[in-house]
Length: 170
Image (cartoon, rainbow, N blue to C red; front, side, top):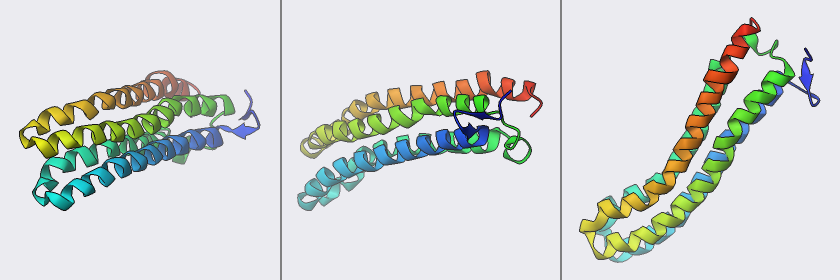
Protein backbone atom coordinates (compact mmCIF):
# COMPACT_ATOMS: atom_id res chain seq x y z
CA UNK A 1 0.00 0.00 0.00
CA UNK A 2 1.21 3.47 -0.82
CA UNK A 3 1.42 5.93 2.01
CA UNK A 4 0.63 8.66 -0.50
CA UNK A 5 -1.86 8.95 -3.32
CA UNK A 6 -1.42 11.60 -5.95
CA UNK A 7 1.46 13.05 -3.97
CA UNK A 8 -0.59 13.62 -0.80
CA UNK A 9 -0.72 11.51 2.35
CA UNK A 10 -3.99 10.06 3.62
CA UNK A 11 -4.35 12.67 6.30
CA UNK A 12 -3.81 15.44 3.78
CA UNK A 13 -6.56 14.08 1.51
CA UNK A 14 -8.96 13.66 4.45
CA UNK A 15 -8.30 17.15 5.79
CA UNK A 16 -8.66 18.61 2.30
CA UNK A 17 -12.08 16.93 1.94
CA UNK A 18 -13.23 18.11 5.36
CA UNK A 19 -12.01 21.63 4.62
CA UNK A 20 -13.86 21.72 1.29
CA UNK A 21 -17.09 20.59 3.00
CA UNK A 22 -16.80 23.30 5.64
CA UNK A 23 -15.80 25.97 3.12
CA UNK A 24 -18.49 25.02 0.57
CA UNK A 25 -21.31 24.91 3.10
CA UNK A 26 -20.19 28.10 4.81
CA UNK A 27 -19.65 30.01 1.59
CA UNK A 28 -23.05 29.08 0.17
CA UNK A 29 -24.82 29.80 3.45
CA UNK A 30 -23.28 33.22 3.80
CA UNK A 31 -24.34 34.11 0.26
CA UNK A 32 -27.87 32.73 0.71
CA UNK A 33 -28.38 34.53 4.00
CA UNK A 34 -27.10 37.77 2.47
CA UNK A 35 -29.65 37.64 -0.37
CA UNK A 36 -32.68 37.15 1.87
CA UNK A 37 -31.37 39.45 4.63
CA UNK A 38 -31.15 42.31 2.13
CA UNK A 39 -34.78 41.82 1.09
CA UNK A 40 -36.00 41.25 4.66
CA UNK A 41 -34.21 44.42 5.76
CA UNK A 42 -36.10 46.39 3.13
CA UNK A 43 -39.42 44.96 4.26
CA UNK A 44 -38.64 45.56 7.93
CA UNK A 45 -38.07 49.27 7.33
CA UNK A 46 -41.80 49.69 6.66
CA UNK A 47 -43.14 46.74 8.66
CA UNK A 48 -40.90 46.09 11.72
CA UNK A 49 -43.51 43.80 13.26
CA UNK A 50 -42.66 41.19 10.57
CA UNK A 51 -39.24 40.44 12.07
CA UNK A 52 -40.46 37.20 13.67
CA UNK A 53 -42.25 35.85 10.59
CA UNK A 54 -39.32 36.76 8.29
CA UNK A 55 -36.58 35.37 10.56
CA UNK A 56 -37.05 31.69 9.53
CA UNK A 57 -36.66 32.69 5.87
CA UNK A 58 -33.38 34.45 6.72
CA UNK A 59 -32.06 31.61 8.86
CA UNK A 60 -32.86 28.63 6.66
CA UNK A 61 -29.99 29.08 4.13
CA UNK A 62 -27.61 28.80 7.08
CA UNK A 63 -28.33 25.12 7.59
CA UNK A 64 -26.00 24.14 4.76
CA UNK A 65 -23.12 25.71 6.62
CA UNK A 66 -24.04 23.52 9.57
CA UNK A 67 -24.00 20.44 7.31
CA UNK A 68 -20.50 21.35 6.14
CA UNK A 69 -19.41 21.83 9.73
CA UNK A 70 -20.90 18.45 10.72
CA UNK A 71 -18.99 16.80 7.88
CA UNK A 72 -15.75 18.40 9.03
CA UNK A 73 -16.31 17.26 12.61
CA UNK A 74 -17.22 13.71 11.53
CA UNK A 75 -14.05 13.42 9.45
CA UNK A 76 -11.90 14.93 12.20
CA UNK A 77 -13.17 12.85 15.11
CA UNK A 78 -14.68 9.64 13.75
CA UNK A 79 -11.62 8.80 11.70
CA UNK A 80 -9.56 8.42 14.92
CA UNK A 81 -7.18 11.37 14.60
CA UNK A 82 -5.12 10.42 17.65
CA UNK A 83 -4.36 6.84 16.69
CA UNK A 84 -4.74 6.53 12.98
CA UNK A 85 -4.07 9.72 11.11
CA UNK A 86 -0.39 9.08 10.56
CA UNK A 87 -1.02 5.53 9.32
CA UNK A 88 -3.87 6.48 7.00
CA UNK A 89 -2.90 5.28 3.51
CA UNK A 90 -3.16 7.86 0.76
CA UNK A 91 -5.82 5.95 -1.16
CA UNK A 92 -8.08 5.74 1.93
CA UNK A 93 -7.61 9.44 2.58
CA UNK A 94 -8.55 10.06 -1.05
CA UNK A 95 -11.80 8.15 -0.45
CA UNK A 96 -12.53 10.36 2.56
CA UNK A 97 -11.90 13.33 0.29
CA UNK A 98 -14.37 11.98 -2.29
CA UNK A 99 -16.95 11.30 0.43
CA UNK A 100 -16.85 14.97 1.44
CA UNK A 101 -17.51 16.30 -2.07
CA UNK A 102 -21.34 15.90 -2.05
CA UNK A 103 -21.64 18.21 0.95
CA UNK A 104 -18.96 20.58 -0.34
CA UNK A 105 -20.64 21.21 -3.68
CA UNK A 106 -24.36 20.56 -3.09
CA UNK A 107 -24.51 22.60 0.12
CA UNK A 108 -22.67 25.51 -1.48
CA UNK A 109 -25.04 25.68 -4.43
CA UNK A 110 -28.26 24.80 -2.58
CA UNK A 111 -27.67 27.45 0.10
CA UNK A 112 -27.38 30.13 -2.57
CA UNK A 113 -30.56 28.97 -4.29
CA UNK A 114 -32.33 28.57 -0.97
CA UNK A 115 -31.55 32.19 -0.22
CA UNK A 116 -32.93 33.19 -3.62
CA UNK A 117 -36.07 31.10 -3.04
CA UNK A 118 -36.50 32.80 0.33
CA UNK A 119 -36.24 36.14 -1.47
CA UNK A 120 -39.20 35.06 -3.60
CA UNK A 121 -41.18 33.97 -0.54
CA UNK A 122 -40.54 37.10 1.57
CA UNK A 123 -43.10 39.34 -0.21
CA UNK A 124 -45.71 36.65 0.40
CA UNK A 125 -45.14 37.05 4.16
CA UNK A 126 -45.10 40.84 3.87
CA UNK A 127 -48.46 40.98 2.10
CA UNK A 128 -50.18 38.13 3.91
CA UNK A 129 -48.64 37.27 7.26
CA UNK A 130 -50.87 34.22 7.62
CA UNK A 131 -49.06 32.65 4.63
CA UNK A 132 -45.79 32.35 6.56
CA UNK A 133 -46.03 28.57 6.78
CA UNK A 134 -46.51 28.20 3.05
CA UNK A 135 -43.75 30.69 2.35
CA UNK A 136 -41.33 28.60 4.42
CA UNK A 137 -42.17 25.41 2.51
CA UNK A 138 -40.76 26.81 -0.73
CA UNK A 139 -37.14 27.25 0.45
CA UNK A 140 -37.45 24.09 2.55
CA UNK A 141 -37.87 22.13 -0.69
CA UNK A 142 -34.39 23.29 -1.74
CA UNK A 143 -33.10 22.02 1.61
CA UNK A 144 -33.97 18.48 0.57
CA UNK A 145 -30.95 18.23 -1.68
CA UNK A 146 -28.56 19.51 0.98
CA UNK A 147 -29.91 16.91 3.40
CA UNK A 148 -29.51 14.19 0.78
CA UNK A 149 -25.90 15.20 0.19
CA UNK A 150 -25.19 15.04 3.93
CA UNK A 151 -26.81 11.60 4.14
CA UNK A 152 -24.72 10.32 1.21
CA UNK A 153 -21.54 11.70 2.78
CA UNK A 154 -22.28 10.15 6.18
CA UNK A 155 -23.25 6.79 4.65
CA UNK A 156 -20.08 6.75 2.59
CA UNK A 157 -17.93 7.66 5.62
CA UNK A 158 -19.52 5.18 8.02
CA UNK A 159 -20.63 2.30 5.77
CA UNK A 160 -17.89 2.23 3.14
CA UNK A 161 -14.78 3.90 4.53
CA UNK A 162 -15.00 3.27 8.29
CA UNK A 163 -15.05 -0.57 7.94
CA UNK A 164 -12.16 -0.33 5.50
CA UNK A 165 -10.36 1.92 7.96
CA UNK A 166 -10.95 -0.58 10.76
CA UNK A 167 -9.92 -3.57 8.58
CA UNK A 168 -6.55 -1.94 8.07
CA UNK A 169 -6.09 -2.00 11.84
CA UNK A 170 -5.86 1.76 12.09
